[in-house]
Image 1 (cartoon, one colour):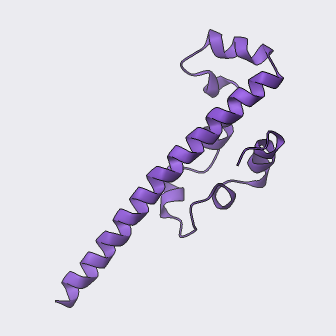
Image 2 (image 1 turned 180 degrees about the horizontal axis):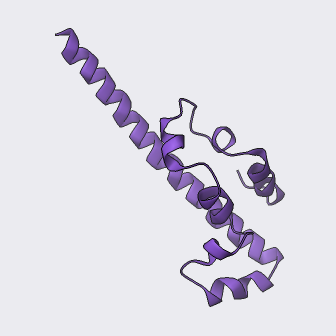
Length: 106
């Protein structure tokens, strides 16, 4: 009986973390999208980079938030397995946060 209760608690905790992680990643993706377009509005020449390489401009362009949050940021596995609350401030370094604050995105 106790084993079933413990297994149930572990499964509920794991399911909660999975849902929280999925919602967090969607939030980070929205932040990246907003940042990239605000950056392009201030630096119109970057739009040419985006148009030339539509499918993966974020891989080659250092200014893209997708680049510095997803590709050069912490791995999804380390974010998922950390015991920290899933917020952008807790998961990413100060340099990435400063870049986001330039365009007032949080």
